[in-house]
Image 1 (tube, rainbow, N blue to C red):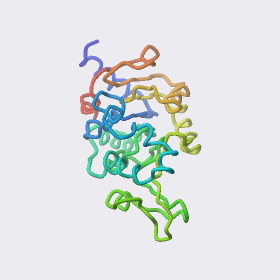
Image 2: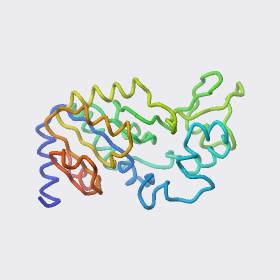
Image 3: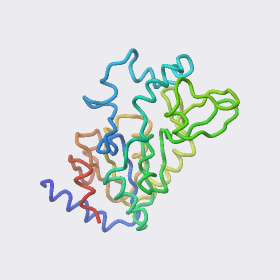
Image 4: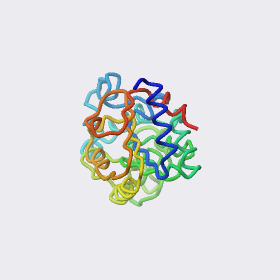
Length: 241
């Protein structure tokens, strides 16, 4: 099938499905201008005093907190970005009752900004920040608009509610995502290389009728999908509705 035929097939499957779940990665937000991690222009291929994988670890956060926040404010501030057509179309599908959940590996909060309500954020969100001493909530502006190490009124260090390397995923979030995926009759996996575990392992719980993969590059799961579209998400989702 050519591109047009695949997009037509995608919309046909979508029309026939009643319980759709969307599972997305960094590629969902790149069209909003947010760089991904593993492409040639991604964060992992930029030069810093330390590799991004090291900076975004719990050990580094605890031992070099100020250096962590220099990188964090510079590279992970999603407040200046807006949702794109994919985010908005997913929110529309949720309001129509067809899309039951969004499962995302992203921490940028753009799904909620576009209007999605039932979002399982596997890796947390930059929009939530908590004092490590007293537990008080602080918004993203408090962290991104400040300097140095953000501190609560009580003196405690404020930590973003994002899952760093060496930290486990939130059990309740994972369980909710698993339930949603297991109940779906259509699972759309998009903008992810499906190489990050344990998040990528969640699609093993899908028992529905149609697995659709939308990604610019091939993934390890392509041969198991009912439809593979190697095009931009914007091209695919602009056709929806």
